[in-house]
Length: 260
Image (cartoon, rainbow, N blue to C red):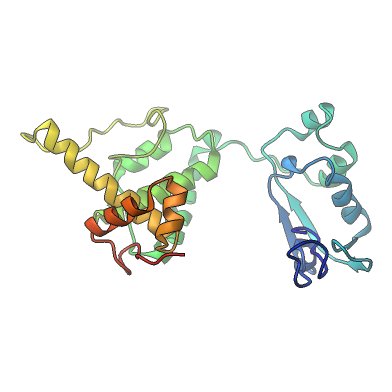
């Protein structure tokens, strides 16, 4: 249904006819991400569309013709998947007309500043602009990025949320959410702890900063819906509501008290 659409009454809940991705992309380009995850039983259907440029909606009898360009991406070695019997050989050759191999991000670190610039422009559309500290840039350049651009985007978005939650306009390496820390020759900056401040007071301050940043981020992700946010974080709804109130998070400040 997602790819080919469906007719009204095709299955329970199909109250109206719906166009799928192929139909919506008619006259343009359709990008199929993680094509290596496509189940074997769906692969012949995709092959048929690529070969004949026609398909039927789920529950339909009419052939729908499309004129599209198809781009597909995967992190898997599809040749190896073919040998293992997990990917159809005929579909592989139909897709691999002009193969483009993109090296992992750790092998093209010179691209990281360009990617960061584009990502910062994107996140700036949803809030006040922020910039990266030199230490943050070094840490990001030094990390191996096993998750490639997706991991980089995730880390940057979380760092932006943390900075905005405490009113910062510069993203520092303090609390940078990188498993195992940065690798590969970057500097190892020391977090700006306050001299003379006790361990207990320092920990309490960090816990409060974390709570504010996390709850702000969580409510923002869920459009201020307390119940939905609590389910996502596996938290008690009443506790999350109380925590948001304590932190002074109200509509317009990263969340609201509205329910489902």
